[in-house]
Length: 163
Image 1 (cartoon, rainbow, N blue to C red):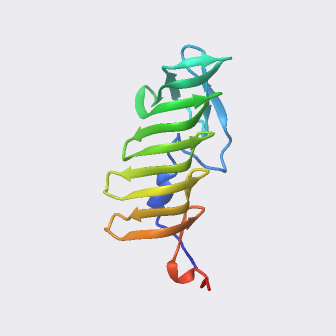
Image 2 (image 1 turned 90 degrees about the vertical axis):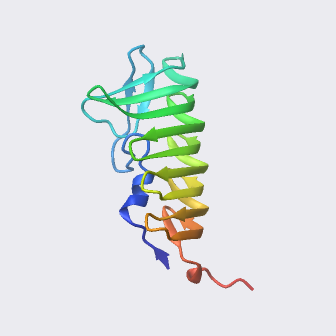
């Protein structure tokens, strides 16, 4: 049996602006003409990249600042490749922060997310959600340790017996 997680765990996966597989990915151009992938474009949104621009795309190490109507909403510090967060990086947004590996602007590999409510998840990620081995502390202090499948915790009792 796979246990469904509360809504807040899904929110932790929504770190680069409003990730949702159902929305259309687009591109945003900063004031220097450097393109950055925009997972979920929104009216009034802007981005500013401090690193290099290769062939018109954010590339290399730097800081990416996302704003909404002039108010900073997120700051990513780390590596970019062809306009995507790629490799190691840190992302801060109101309510929480993620430090770890990225692939095509989604958490992918090993990383840790901490929420301002005291909850956290540390472990393996795939395509923006916990997937593989990991450990989570919920806002009420419960600790879930084990396997995750596409953002859902696999309860230990549900694991097939190995002989």
